[in-house]
Image 1 (cartoon, one colour):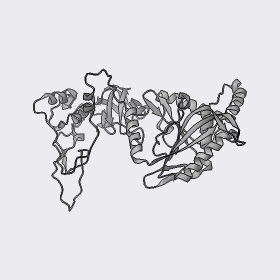
Image 2 (cartoon, rainbow, N blue to C red):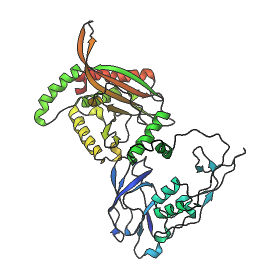
Image 3 (cartoon, rainbow, N blue to C red):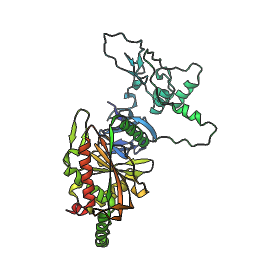
Length: 430
């Protein structure tokens, strides 16, 4: 029987993606393992392979379509001896189910309750409508009922033009409204309301891509749900800079040049071993303590950032860490990292020192337990152990900590270990 090819989940957190490019056409024969399409997630563009074999009978989602939900049919395969007449038309009969109002006005399944409830209306299951993802999205934005719209596409499929035509009619088929006696919850102004504030002013509207939407959602959630607290230390870098210069002179013939960031990565990886209770993540109803030091490092890319992961960083020499970091950063900027290369770990580093930033507070990357914000090394007057006023290169470091995972004293011990490793850099070589 015909097989629907569904939008794949190419990472554990993927909910939707962009069908960047089809690598097959209608009528092509494919076998298991053949490349079908390039799918753009919030983090990378990845190739999607066929699991079944057969002929591509119909491509349901066009190239360049954004916001395609996971498990949405994107194409149909026909097996041997089958033809287009064997393709079953999706049901266009509205499927209703009991629903209850939520704070956002959307409907969900309701459980029997002995307490009085507010009146609700049955919600149409849009997933059973035969419509393009773009048409669904426009219908949701315009609050239109797909069940009341007649499709003009192949086999009665509802397309963008059908939804726009329905919206222009005097009595557009709106979705049933939800009534509730609950108090109205304050919310952010709508996009249209904000845009109207700037009518008459010159501006450019920039559409959100998958990466920017994900960054906005994850960091908003992080600031809402993670109880951040912050620990700050000044770290002297004079010995580290001297050692780095010596090593780079010796490695110059091999084409290796270590950065200060390489030393910071290694110092933090060792500190996670020295204070193992800080090598932890929040897992909802438990804490997971990791044994290896898997360190994520923020890399700025066009339109957002990645946090490539250096696994077992405590066990690798500086030269290997440096080469691996350069490779990950280069592929991150090309959005060619695989999910396992930017997911995991317990700790992140965000270094804005190269941009001249003295200090800043970083937002924790969930489920990590902490993140180190690194500022620039600056020449400053300090008082040494003998009470003498001297000039030294000092770097400000701020540790953002998830209080659910790491308490104050533990966080202080962890940051102290990082400071000692950086101020005594020979420890990073053994």
